[in-house]
Image 1 (tube, rainbow, N blue to C red):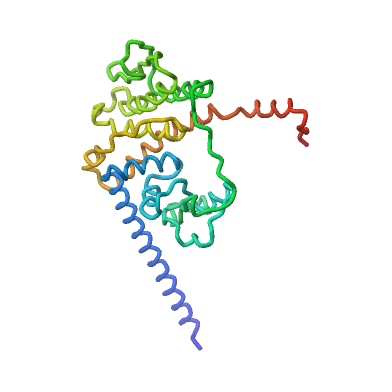
Image 2 (image 1 turned 90 degrees about the vertical axis):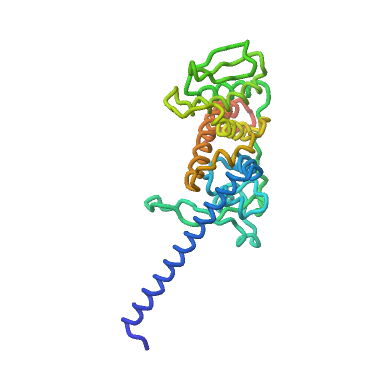
Length: 296
């Protein structure tokens, strides 16, 4: 019969082995993430796929989206088991071991750092159909979205009907020039990109600013904003991606992609809040409907 000391020693060794195993898995996943980010920022086709997937999952980090791309077959909508439960769906039993390994925040808010978890594509789940948002089209809703998008600009704007394009950011005057002769949708698409240029320029504080050099970044942000709302927008010239990221370390590539994602998310969130039905309007419609009962 083992002594108490032997039991404690065995338990300590077992804990040590588990800790080393988890550390090795984290290191392996970190390496996979770095490799995935390098692939995305080197291959034009993969970069185009990344932009679409990131736009459709704008709340997820660039590193996790790249990890999902490297492990799942043509992912579209991705998330954790909890995410899918909140959508009224569940991961099918046969798919439980086929998720993409990613880094996820802990449920305990006092725990610092990230844990390893899994993302699953919607094709690996079953349950309630996902409600797809109605795409933005010409009309009052598009006009509201355009006004909200304009609110995210860090500079002012002027009307210029002589402009050869719908919108152009002038770095000389630090102003957005808008040609109202174009349709609201055309202006919306151009504005999403030109606001990104204005943010990068930072009213001239960015001494490295050059429109051509930051074209891929600005157009990528614009594309993600538009794609999120189903607005037709041309894909950036992804052929420049390898040249753009040539001198970036893998960690810096992830930070660059995440900065674009956050910019697109902040712009898109502002637009989304503007086009969602107001709570008071919702309540009013309930009150005007004779079939509705009063709240208890």
